[in-house]
Amino acid sequence: MKNLFLFLIVLITIASCDSIDSTYNTFPEGEKDHTNSNFDKAKTKHLDWNAEINFDEKKINATAKWTFENKGTDELILDIKDIEVSKVVLADKEVEFEIRAVDSMGDALIIPIGKNDSTVEITYSAGGGVAIQWLAKEQTAGKKMPYLFTQCESIYARTLVPCQDAPANRITYNATVKVPTGMMAVMSAKNPKQKNAEGIYKFEMELPIVTYMIALAAGDIEYKAIDARSGVYTEPSMLAKCARELEDIPSMIAAAEKLGGPYPWGNYDVLVCPPSFPIGGMENPRLTFATPTIIAGDKSLVSLIAHELAHSWSGNLVTNSNWNDLWLNEGFTSYFEKRIMEEITDKDYTEMLWEIAYQDLQADLKDFKENKWNDTRLKVDLKNRHPEECFSAIPYDKGALFLRTLEETVGREKFDIWLSKYFAAHKFTPMNTGMAVKYMEENLDLQNADIDIQEWIFKPGLPEKTAYVFPKRFKKIDDATKTFLANPRNAESLNARSWSTHEWLYFLRKLPKPMETKTLRTLDASYALTGIGNSEIADEWYLQAIASKYERAYPAMEKFLKSVGRKKFLEPLYKELVKTEDGKKLAIRILDEAAPNYHPLAARKMRTIVK
Image (cartoon, rainbow, N blue to C red):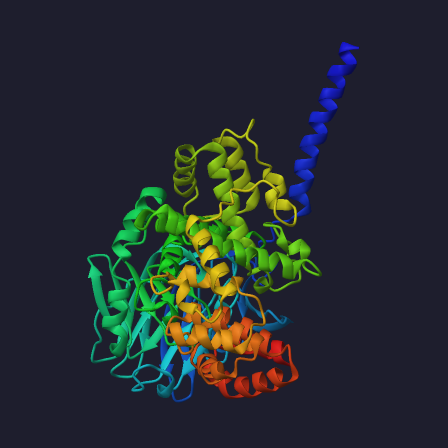
C-alpha cells in the first residue's frame, strides 16, 4: 500500500509537470510570427542612416547601411512595406535584389550575401507608410511650418527603413537627417537642444534597441530643459505651458529609480506632438512622444508620462521577444506607473488610478466575451494575426493587476527586490513569458503562496482572487451622486468644483444613460462641461451627450472630434454615434472632414466603425 501511495504521488507530480509544460507548448513564443526577415541566420547589428526629408513631395530619401552578422546563410532578408528601393550595394559593388510580396503585413527584401560579407547599403525612398504622418503647417499649433512624426510600434518600422522588424532583434544606430532650414529634427537618440542654420542633425543611439523604437520627428520644434537630464520639446507656442505641466518629471525619475534601479538611458525628454498623434504616448528611448491631450493645465493627466517613463525599464530595457507577450511590456509598465504615482502623490490618489484602469479592464472583458474571449489571456496566440489585435486593456490592466496581486501575496518588500533584480538580470535581453515565469518561480517564494500564476497568464478572464481595492475617495462620489440623482435640479449639491479628473471620470461613467436633457443642462450650467479643456472629462461628457441626445453639446463634440487624433477618445465617440441612424449620418460627415487630420492608423480604425 505504501509503495502504491508513493507511485501515485510520482504520477501526480509528473502529470503536474506535464500540465505546465503543455501549457507553455500550447502558446508558442512566436518570435518570427510577424517578420519576414531571417534575423536568426543573418542578424543586423548596427544601422547608419542618412536621410533627407522632402516635405513638398512627402518623401524621405535615404540610405540605410546595415552591419550584420552572417551565421551561415547566402542571403540577408529584411522587412519592408511601402518603400521604393533603388539600389543595393554589397562590398562596394551594386548587386541584384528581390522584393517578394508576402502578406498584408509586409514584404521581404532579399539580398544575396557571401560568408565574409558584413555590411550592406540600401538606397530607397519612403513616405507613404503607416509609420509616417505628414502634417501641413495649418495642422500644427504655430501654423508656420509643416511637421512630420513617426510611430513605429508595432510592426511599422519596416515602412520607415528596411530592417529586421522583430522585437527579438536589437540594434544600435547612428543617423544624419537633413530638414528644411528653420526646422529641428529629433530622434530616439542623443538629441540636439537648439536649431542650426544648416538643418542637418546627427544622432547616436549606442545602446541596443528594437526597431519599433526608432523614432523621428521634424518641424518647428524647440527645447526647454527642466533639469540637467530632462526637458520638453514641442512647438514654440506651446513650450512654456508644456514645461510647466511636466515640471515634475525629475521627481518621477527619482521615484522610478527606487524601484527599477538607475535610469539607464542618459536624458529623459518628452516631445509633445501635434494633436493628430494617435496614441497617448510612445516610449521611444530618451524621447517619449506624447499627445497634447495630457496638457490639461493642472497636471491631472501626467500619469501618462509616468507610464512612458516606466517603459525605460519595462519595455525598452527588458523587451518582449514577440507580440504574443505584450503583457511583459505593458502589464509591468502599468504596474510600475502606479508605483511612481503613489510615490509622488499618495496611496488614496493612486487607488483612483487603479479603479479607472479596472473599469477599462472590465469593459474590455465584456466586449471580448462574445468572440475574442481567448484574447483575455495575458499570453495570447497571434499566429497569422496582426499584432495590433493584442492592444487592449488586457495586457495593460490585467497584467498590472496580476503583478499587484503577486506583490500583495509575497509582500511589497520581497516583490520590490525581485522586480529590481528582474530588470538588472534581463536588460537588453529579449524576454518571453516562459522566462518571466521561471524567474518568478526561482526568485519568489511561491510554493505556499495563494496565487495561481498559470490561471492569470494562460486562462481567459480574470481570476476570482485579485488585489482589487475600491478607492475611499470614490465612496464619497457615490454618496454625492446618489444625492444629485434624487434631486437633479440641484447640481451644486455635488460640491464638485474641487474634484480631480479621476473623480469626474468616475462620476460621469456611473451616470445612467440616457439622461433627461434638463438634467444635463443643469450639470452643464454649473460646471461648464461642454467645451471643457480636459480631454478625458470631455470624452466622457460627450459620450453622455450623444447617448442622451443632448444636442447643445454637439457643436463642441464635433470640434473635439476634429481637433483630437488620439484613438482612445475617438473610438468610443464614433461607436456611440453610430448606434442611431441620425448619429451615424453625423459620424460619417464628421469623419469625412476630420480624417485628413488623423493619423492613418486612427483614420483606418474610425472608418471601420462608421462604415
